Image (cartoon, rainbow, N blue to C red; front, side, top):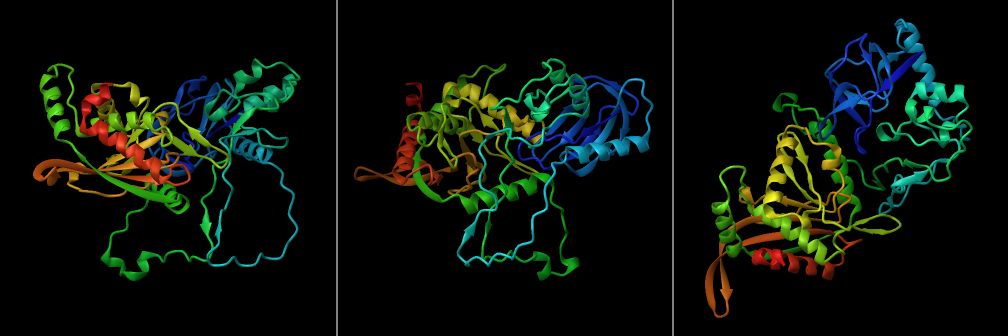
Length: 444
């Protein structure tokens, strides 16, 4: 029997990817866990493992193919000893796709709805919860081999919880199941990601090419990362009610502390602290002190996070990514420094795992190294806030009745007003300022 190998969804936001490299050839024997290919997503390049055993029949997608849709067939898998029959393989793939498609009854024609008023904001799809319960008739994600074995053994495949990629049911799940198992009432499956919202009455922006001659510009097609950045941040800026809070922090003590610690660092396997390392640590401690900021919005509840998982924005030649320092409140400055450097290096090489850049409870974007004095950053859901950090520069400050020269750093926090009120955000920045201006307070 021919089994189809589908393009995997290696992250919740992945809709398509690039098949960067095949790690197997036609005719190779593979078993569950063997590496099949390298898949390039919008954020990273990851290895794709086999979930079933057999012999590679036909590689349907060539190396380097871009824009391969998730769940599109990319290869066929034959049972060991079975001869490859391309025509039969393609027919099997078509039959499997048709069998897995949920039947949908045609809806009767209805009159078109009246146009919404210009100011109306219409959500395309209501935000779904993070986990949904399997309902009767809902599509079950399982390999064709697992389906066939389940049918032979009389196992209700709806009752199983998959152990394969993204919860897919594989051969091992069926073989360990009891025949006649009943569907679990609370079998969790991932809900579909909500679609972007549209704004009624607002015309789409015109294509910029309409304003220029074809020989006056170079057209650079969007890659998957740029498309994802555009989609997510447009949604965030449109749907999140933002407000901004700015505060100046005097960092003379921080700079002298940093210099002393770097001088005292051992030469071998040592560290070199940056101002940003102090910012990460101060942010994490401020999140614990003001936990209302360490939260995420959902339609039914605010999620209050138990740890400060701080994302650090890393600029790439091809876009932007925010790897996360998990449990940052529990880590020392040297550990944070080395971890951020490692994450940044692997991010630039597109070698981060999805678990290293998805989620988090807060984010930092630092443009101080470019001489930017102050700016505002766009919130990256599921975060409820992001801290934009400017350059530390010499400024005249008034201390008592005297004017002194001090090193001052301006930070601006973008806040989701659904989660954070003005006074709450102000208390967070007060705590952050205390830790930054007196680094020794981070030891308390």
